Image (cartoon, rainbow, N blue to C red; front, side, top):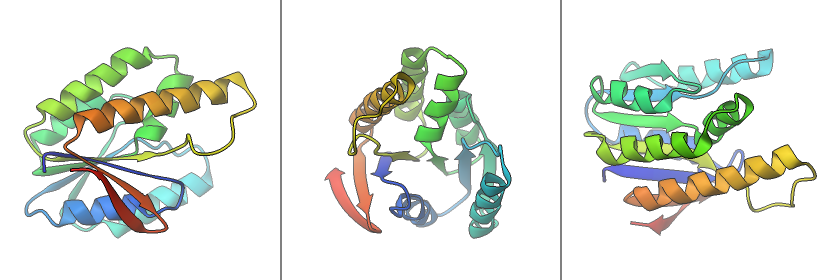
Length: 169
């Protein structure tokens, strides 16, 4: 496996599944975090996730510059976990970045990375149609991002209720 996309809904078990897949590899592990702590709840979530990772993990915070973070992590670790693409997309969308260019850069990094990359993303297109333009754009962009990453990855797994379902690979 050189690349894996793990999809799922909120609290589906996707991050835990992805972390266990990384930890099955020998060597150094890099965790690329895209979350930003804007409130105490998010600070607590980040702290909890950091506590769940052991000493093998190096954490790189990359709320927007994910492509460079992947290249940097590839020189520091034997496996990379990106958690999560959905938060990264939110950060880019709100900062009015060129989403198509960012998506292309990410695909290039995943395909060119010399170490395995495991990426986590929410599947947000399974519910009702959002009631406002920004939310609809986010849903559409997330769908396009997930499609592009899934096409670039050798393996794709959907996690629901903590159970993995292999979609590709």
